[in-house]
Length: 366
Ligand code: NAI
Ligand code: MG
Image (tube, rainbow, N blue to C red; front, side, top):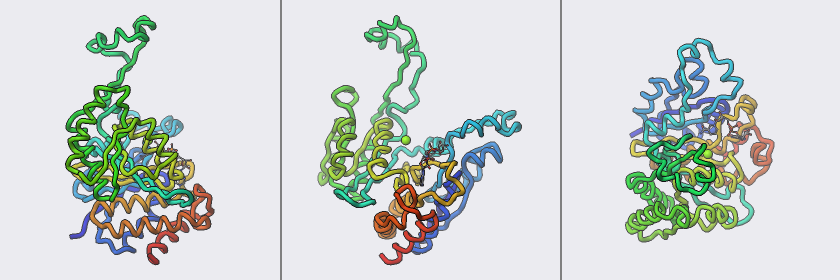
């Protein structure tokens, strides 16, 4: 029962960090078949499609997708010198990540946060972000639609501005979307051994919608009696993530709140070099380091491969290889504390391949 992984290295430092980290899979003897596919900006330049049909086909017969990094927003110079033929065809560059999330309905974004660098209090929690609705549901209007006017027309600032230039965005939440993300949060707590689920919301301002979310939370929490659940204001969660990160287990939030808190989690932990993410849906998941393609750093062998290792760990955990996943995390914990073994972003001098070799070595001795 070998599993198939679609490996999509993508752009910039994506191929570099995956090249460095992928040997750990064979090293640990995990029965996975890696099949490589094309995705991203370079792929679009070459053939006018950032996610070609053969890549969709590969994804559809794979058990998981492992991504390096893609250029989601091409640099302005690059866009200015687009291949004339592509421009003529009007081939649009649509972020491949967004295409994957939408096509595969990957509703949960999971980002672990841990004190890998050591020093201070140990902490280990994760942020679960809802990926498909909330304030990023796409109901974002430059001009308020006529049907909505009666709802906004009486707001004091709308009156003060004489009804000119008003924008509106709607935080959409559905019972379907809420139940699946909340259940995912509790399942994550149960499987990863966290004792607490914290919903980060804004009940004292968004009173009606937050009251409904709390009601869904309480209903679902009843199925997980061993897990503590609570609702906190999102701003308080931000403060406490910095001041007392050890108090959290799973922090779950709607799309925009979760977007912000998940980047904050990366910052708490010491930067993009250690931030891994999973995007999970009913049909499977895709796994990628949080960082982008860092085009300015590409080709220099300086990128930190640790996030790619931790991402592979998350994928192995999802596929049921828990002890191998733990082995990778333990190796990163071990190496991240040794300044002579890490890359520049963590204060070291190691190259991508040197840092990767140290992590694989640490897996060996574990
Ligand atoms: P970025 O994450 O690529 O780089 C931001 C900064 O972090 C840079 O200074 C870079 O040198 C540093 N950095 C990133 N990864 C690192 C690593 N592994 N080791 C050491 N240092 C690292 O974000 P940026 O520059 O804003 O975006 C570049 C491209 O990547 C853009 O096209 C953007 O749209 C795309 N992007 C894609 C993401 C995705 O695939 N989900 C996420 C973020 C950006
Ligand atoms: Mg973000």
